Amino acid sequence: MMHLRQILHKSWQASLTQLLPCSCALCHAQNPDVICEQCLITYFPRDICRCEQCGLSMPPGANTPRCGDCLQNPPAFDSTIVACDYEAPQDRLVLSLKFGHHLALAPVFAAMLRDAILRQQHQDLPDFLCVVPLSQNRLTERGFNQALEIARPLAQHLGIPLHPQTLHKTRETAKQSSLAPDARMRNVKNAFVPDDQLLQTIKGRHIGIVDDVITTGMTLHEIATMLKRFGARKVSNYVFARTPHHTY
Image 1 (cartoon, rainbow, N blue to C red):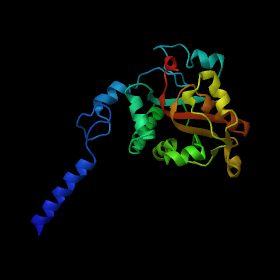
Image 2 (image 1 turned 90 degrees about the vertical axis):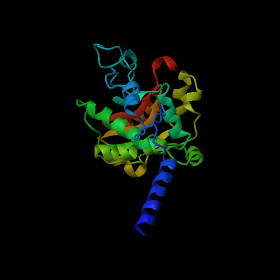
Image 3 (image 1 turned 60 degrees about the vertical axis):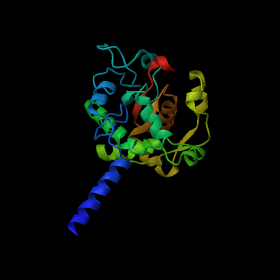
């Protein structure tokens, strides 16, 4: 009987290995983690100088915490923390989560965001997290909101509440990535509203917004504008990847 159990156990382990191959999602080298240590060092460096407001990378040793764009035309949100730039090969991870339904990547994104947030010791944590909502049609089509999948484990890591119903999208909009930068603001104008039941929760609070990618920041600017209109004290963005300025 014991011999049979050992055979069954080994067979189960072999099947599990086939179902869950132990290889890095970026370089595909055999590795027990989703992303190997070498790829973490190469593609997720921790010493990049970034604008504290929009998350864009800045020259090392910049003498201001904000980039020129944020100094000249400050967005409504107060800060942005990202885990990496949205460029090859990191962009494959985002696409795999969003369109490949590889939901196992969401906790990995959350862990990287947690580390990036905790490195910013001068910034206070928000009172709660919420997510950039999808329209009902987009949610039905995709089956999940990738921002919510990232926010759930991130809220647990940070030990703060998650209120996923704080924001609602009022209408269908074109994909921001398909529009020219000057059309993106018009596309999302007045596209978000707060939940009527949570208006008192917003007032006077520091709110964290979670998303997968920030490009021009127009969507997050519109959300922060709306939240501050309803009394939010501060709005911080926690986004996995930041599109470099030269690519949009």
